[in-house]
Image 1 (cartoon, rainbow over the protein chains, first blue to last red):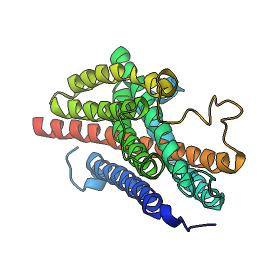
Image 2: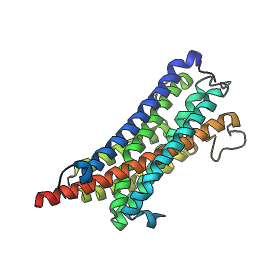
Image 3: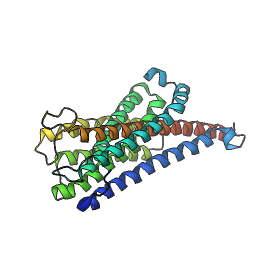
Image 4: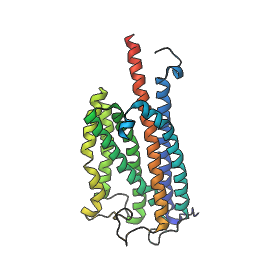
Length: 51
Length: 240
C-alpha cells in the first residue's frame, strides 16, 4: 500500500478526512437518535408508568 | 417486498437484524476498497489524486440514489398516505444530503490540482449543487410546518419536483459541453472505461457506501418509528 501522496497530499488527505468526519457524524447521529427514541418509546427502558 | 415491509411490526423485526448486518458488510467492503485503492498505482495524468475518485464517485452515486429513494418514498406517502413511507422519506434526506455534500467537497479538492480551480459553474457541478439544495429545502420545509402530516405531504411534493433534477445530473456531461469528464463506469465506451486496477476499488467502495446507506437508513427509520410511538404515548398520557 502506498500512502505517500507526494505533492498532492494537501488535496488527497483532506478529501479522505472529510469522508471520515461525515461518516462518523452519520453513524453517531443515527445511532444516538435510535437509542434516544427507543428509550422514549419503551416504558421498560424509560423507567416510568406512562403507559 | 414493499407490501411485506409496509407493516411497521414486520419492518421493525426485519430491520433489527438487517441494519447491523448491512453495517458489518459496509465495514468489510470499505476496508477492502481502501486496501485496493491505496494499492493501485498512481495515474499517469492525475497522479495520486486518482485516489480521491474512490471516495468521490461513490458519494455522487449515493447522493443520487438516496434522492431516488426519497422520491419513491414521497410518492408512496402522497398516494397511500403510509406513515412508514413518510418515515423512510424523512430518514433518507439527511443521509442523501451528507453524501451529496461529500461529492461536492471531494470533487472540489480533486478539481483544484487537476482543473486549477475549486469550483466552476459547469452543468454537472451546478446540477449536483441543485440536488444538495433540494435536500436542504426538503428538510427545511418539513421543519417549518408544525403539523407532521401536512409537513410530510408538502415536503413529498417538493421531493417529487426534485426528481426532475436526477436525469439532468446524470446526462449533464452529455447534454452540455462540460469540464467534468464523461462516464468511465456505467455505459462508458470501450476506450473510456476504467482499467480493472481502478475499477475494483471503485466498485468495492461503491458497494460499501451503498451498504452503509442501507444500514443507516434502516436505523434512522427505526428511530423515526420509535419517535412517533413516543409522541403518541406522550399525548395519551397528557390526555389522562
